[in-house]
Amino acid sequence: MMLAGFFFLLLLTDGASSVGNCSYQAVLKHLDLTRNNQLFYMSRPVDNHTKTTHVFLDVKLYAILDIKEKDQQFVPYVWITMEWHNDYIYWDPDQFCSIKSVSVPSEVMWKPDITIEEMTERDKAPPSPYLIITNNGTVKVANDQVLVSTCTMETYKFPFDIQRCTLTFTSIVHSVKELELKPFVNSAEATEDSREVMRTQSEWLFISMNVSNKSIEMDGFNQSFVIYTITMKRRSALYVVNFLLPILFFLCLDLVSFLISDSGGEKLSFKVTVLLAVTVMQLILNEILPSSSDKIPLVAIYCIGMFAMMMLSLVETIVVMYLIEKDSASQDDNEHIGLDVNCGDSPANFLNCLEVNKRRHNESSCSDSIGEMPSELRSVDKEDSDCQLKNESSEKLSGEAVRTLILLLNSMKAEGKKPGYWTRMTKIINKVFLGFYVTAAGLFLLCIFVGWTKEQD
Ligand SMILES: *[C@@H]1O[C@H](CO)[C@@H](O)[C@H](O)[C@H]1NC(C)=O
Ligand SMILES: *[C@@H]1O[C@H](CO)[C@@H](O)[C@H](O)[C@H]1NC(C)=O
Ligand SMILES: *[C@@H]1O[C@H](CO)[C@@H](O)[C@H](O)[C@H]1NC(C)=O
Ligand SMILES: *[C@@H]1O[C@H](CO)[C@@H](O)[C@H](O)[C@H]1NC(C)=O
Ligand SMILES: *[C@@H]1O[C@H](CO)[C@@H](O)[C@H](O)[C@H]1NC(C)=O
Ligand SMILES: *[C@@H]1O[C@H](CO)[C@@H](O)[C@H](O)[C@H]1NC(C)=O
Image (cartoon, rainbow, N blue to C red; front, side, top):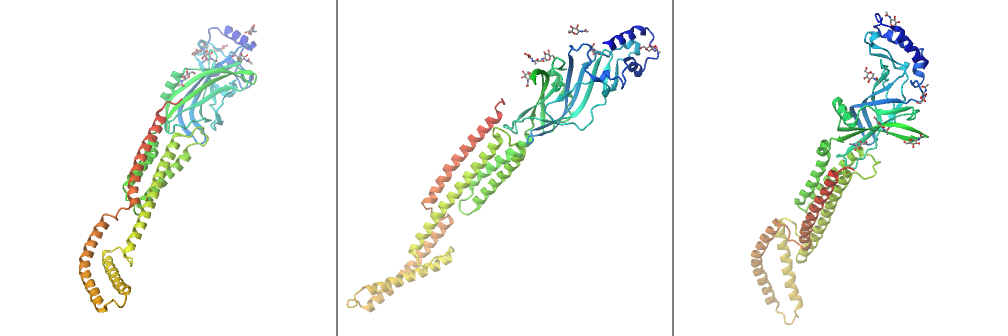
């Protein structure tokens, strides 16, 4: 009060002479603004304590440097401008060579104690050393800051998610009656400003910056808040190309693998390989997504769903292989009934083997018939010649028969073994399962797709 009166007096006595008052020092001298003048930085610059200091805030987003979903961290680079009125600063530009503003060291002036609630780390760079005062008492300070702030991120729709991070500005010690925070510009202007100055957005696309002010009762007194809500959208193209599509391709590979023959282990090992590839993808996903999410992210459901389907198809392959094995085992048993010597796979072996079998068979039948007959009724010579005759004729006959049989067997070998009951069943099982698989995969993908495109609430 006294100081203001003093200035007023000074201005009155100043008169018309302004020659030589063209330096900033003259203005400071006029204001009595020196390091030793503690009045300027000790307390809130109002000439009546009931007055409220209005602090206007302006935040421009220059860059989105980093977003760590895992740590729930948002690192923007911002310019923060604050403006308020100091009742003790006034000069007439006409008397000071039209000087309208002077920059002074920031420590000589009172500054509002504005903090950002979400900030978890102090900026290492020193704050701007100067602030600007204007002839009618407006004080302006601008600071650039790399903010390391917390931000609760909802990763349900990853990688098609939209994140909202807030920066809440407030004064720690002053109530709303003493210090009121106000945004300098409205949401539309703030968005426009930030879009103009934006340098880098990394994998994010800046959408908008919403500004709102409110006053909330805290610790017994009302505090003023200005909240900047930064909305941004993830650029998902790379995730689609590098993550979602490969898994989809693996599913296609798994579907195509139904064309591989069930016999032999190729189909099984192929399916296991595809399944392992999906597991690798899941590991990568684990590194990106935070474990704090309430809802399981759709992408994790996508992954595990694909995994489950491929696993089912693997199980189906194993079952089918088991059935075929069972079938061939019983088939082998059948073949062995007529043959005393186990015959190999090659036709030459088979031929020899059949000869051996045939000979044994004949010998046994002949000697058997001899053994069975009562000795009195038996004419040994006749029987012997009969048996010989039978053997010779059957040898001739069976020579032809064996050849045709071998041809038949060969042709059957070429088109696979004679299909048994289970082999026929596996064909049906395969078809039914493929139908089920394709339907389930289609429905699943559709559900996931709907989930991803649905509006975020
Ligand atoms: C500069 O202004 C002061 C008042 O603010 C006045 O007393 C002084 O005479 C002026 N100096 C000149 C050289 O005009
Ligand atoms: C300070 O402000 C209050 C209310 O705003 C007013 O009643 C009082 O007279 C003022 N005091 C001075 C010295 O101006
Ligand atoms: C102070 O002056 C600046 C320009 O010099 C102007 O923009 C601002 O509105 C003025 N403020 C007041 C309170 O007169
Ligand atoms: C911005 O804030 C206003 C009110 O504070 C709200 O109505 C509006 O929906 C918000 N816009 C966005 C995009 O969040
Ligand atoms: C928000 O700021 C505007 C002026 O910028 C003011 O009119 C309004 O009262 C403020 N709202 C609250 C809740 O402080
Ligand atoms: C805070 O403000 C509300 C209205 O906005 C008022 O009802 C309440 O009494 C205030 N509290 C204090 C401690 O001033």
